[in-house]
Every structure is written in C-alpha cells, then in structure tokens.
Image 1 (tube, rainbow, N blue to C red):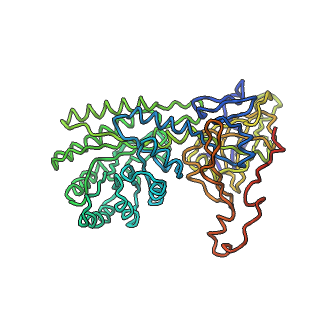
Image 2: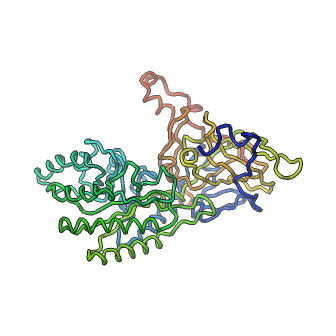
Image 3: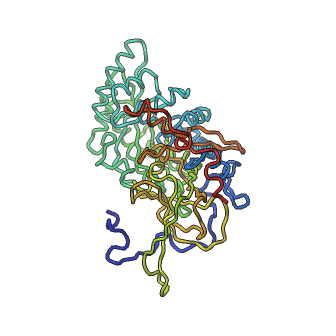
Length: 497
C-alpha cells in the first residue's frame, strides 16, 4: 500500500505537501501541458477560440473539450516523423465516430482492441485494410468479424487464438479469399519505467508470446506453415507513458533478433515490425516527453543497425501513438460545488496550521479513474477568471462515495475559489472518457470538439433515459425530467464570475 489507510495524520505525522512550494504566479498555461490553442482572454481560459464559460453554459459540466486542431496536428507530427512507416492510432485511448473519421482522413492506421472498437471504426467508414485488431482473448465472434471485414492485420497473442483463427481463415481461402495477414506479438522481457499496471513487456503478465521461452519463435514457425495465414511481421509493446527511448531501443534489438531466428528457421524474411506505442505526454510542467522526431530517428537507426548485423532486409516499421495524439488536446471542465478546509497539522511556522482545501467538483472517478487507478498526476487551473489571491494548498476531488475519488492530489489554487467557479484539468484526452463508468449512477459527460470558434458535440451527454433503458425493471419507466436527465442550457451560469 502507498500509505496507511488512516491517512497522513496516522501516528501524528504531518508530511509536507506533495504540491511543492507555492508558485509565484497561479493559473499559468504551460504550453507543453495545455492544448495548443489554450490561452487566457481577459483572465478566462479559451480553447479553440471558445471561452470555457460559454462552453459550460451551452453543454453543462463535467465536459470534455477537445481541441480538434491540436489532435490533428499531433497526428500529423507523427505521420511526418514516421513518413516511411505506418502510424497506427491506438483507439483505446479515445475513440468515437468523429475521431475515426479524422484519423481516416489524415491517412493514419487504427488499432482496435475489441470487436466493438472494430465495429465502431468500420461503421464510421474507416478503411478495413488500415485496421489491426489486438487483444489477449479474442473471441471466435471477434476473429470472424475481423476475417470477414478483411482488416489489415490480426495481432496474434496465444496458441489458443491460432487454433481459433485457422479454420476461419481456411474457410475464407476456400471461398476464394486470400490468406489472413497476421502479426505475432512477442513479449520481449523489457521492464518499462512506468506503472506496473501499464508495463506490458515483462515476462509475468498476460500479453503475447514469450521470446525468452521460445514461444514467440514457435508461434511464428507454426503460422508460417499454415497456408491460410500470412505472417507479415512481428509486434512488440513495452508499456505506456514512457519518457525515454532506451526501452524502445532495447525492444527493437530483441525483436529484430527474433526476425533473425525466424529467418534461420524458415528462410522467411518478415517485412514488417510494429514496435507499439507508449510514448509519454506531459501531464505536469516538469514532465519531459520525447518528440516524435526523436523517437523515429532512434528507432530507424537501431533497427537498421540490427538488421545489417544479421544480414536481414530492413522491415517496414509501425508505431501506435494513441496517447501521444489524443492526450494533450483535451481538457475537462468541472464546476466547484463545495470547498472544505481540513487542518493537517503544523506548517513549520510557529502557531500556523497546515490546511488543505478539499475542492469538490461535479465529476470525479467516473470520468477520470486514472488518479485512483494508477496514481496518475494532473494539473488544473481556475478557468472562468483570473485571481490575484494568495495560493492555497488544495486537493481536487470528485463527488463519488469513495475517499479515493481524487482528480488532482495536491496543487495550489487561488485562495478565493468559490462554489460555482470552473476548474479545467489538462491532459484528459486519453483513457479518461474511454474508461468512464456510471459509478454512483453518474452520467458520462459529453465530448465537444472546438476549432476556430466553433464547438461541435461529437459525443453527446449520457442521460438517465440511456441508463434506464438497460434496466430490466425501469426500461419502460417514463423518461426523467430534463432538470434531472441533463443539465439545462443555463447550467449554473449565475454562480460564475
């Protein structure tokens, strides 16, 4: 456990605040953390040319605000850096019909991790030949869907999966179709410097075929010998939110070594190498992620050198920067509901208590589980106005019935924040809406895309009618009134400055 369940006051210990020293200026928008269009106009946060108070008034809070130009420009950055490779957008970061269409229009590929993600992409018109399907436990139905749709790659994860796929692929070939193109996911034994729950290439976890035990080579040889399958290459993924290239370079070294083993065993030189994603983004000003250009140059260099040493042709590379595209361009807006000062102990100044303000907002772990799940760190600012008030130590928390319902664990906000103010949390574009839940029967927020002063709702706010429709007892109950079902257009406007 990270801490005693009794909290920081256990045994009379009052630890120093993790927020660090109070800044000299509050509300600064670090360009590395905030969307590329973010700025303050008369003290108010503006995104994509729209002021946040207008967005909150029109769409309610909580609200995900996605800077379309930011999203698409980051996709273009990866496409440019990997111009001679395939950039696969990892749909698990955030996927909806509009995002699928943007990715398709911008020429990228797309990774799906379930049959439903695949179905959404196909329904949005995404080209099947540019889709790869991942997953450690693909069902026969999902495999059949992928084969029937003619997707670009199936990423094989287990021997059971090969057993399930072969008869489906054989039926396709017998009907005049071509063999099903697949990749083998290799577990390369790299310990990524990230949270244990998002590190995915060490041996003791659920993904892939182990390189160390020889399973990866065995799987590759078996697939090559299956006439209904076409092994086009290898896949590796070492984790998520990684800030240096050393892990990727080590993984590339090992996977190219596997290409060499396959070539020696079968005479086949595989033409593709997918090195996965996991490129970190800046959630805090101190974060220092690598740029797409740096990653691309180093991966090209190490793969070329390893292939030369093994006398192999250089395979076509692929990467999966889901978070790197979706994460930085989205901000979540919340309205403050209550502020509760909690005395923690002595501050170091004689007679001065250390106080943390618990600032409660109208969302929480149902729209951003990452702080509770991964100890993820976020930053936020007072968004509807500026302030010259002194900094106050705060913890931004949600409204769920959980003491772990924390959005921003420790930060400094102006001491004059009040109920009705808006807070904006940065960097919520990846793994927030996509991991959202209905815990405590809160409703999933909408996603609004902003660009050049125009706001377009691309995911509507969930309503109680939507939730009741799944309840066998309540499905026929009349829809709740709009006041309960969905925020009114003038949502709390009178309480904001």
